[in-house]
Amino acid sequence: MEEGDKEMVQFGKKLENAKDSMFTYVLYAGVPSTNNDVENSVRKCVMHRNVRRQMKSQKGMRRLSVFLTCFGTWRIRGLHPFTELAKYI
Image (cartoon, rainbow, N blue to C red; front, side, top):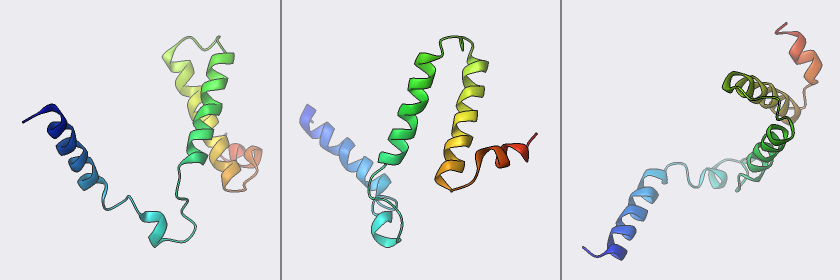
């Protein structure tokens, strides 16, 4: 089998694996067709990580990631972050 054929077979397998979730946005109202919101939220986390160089340990970075994820999720859901955070303190 030639290299181009192998790549096409791999691509076909990826499509086969994704077929059940690839067009979810067509079947369900309110599901976005892109993941731009997710990409933007990840970008914000990366910017925070780069700016806050004091988070040098994996543990510190993990805590920051969880914290930013919670705040981002609450923002998307229209919840007040400090009210939500108070539930866990």
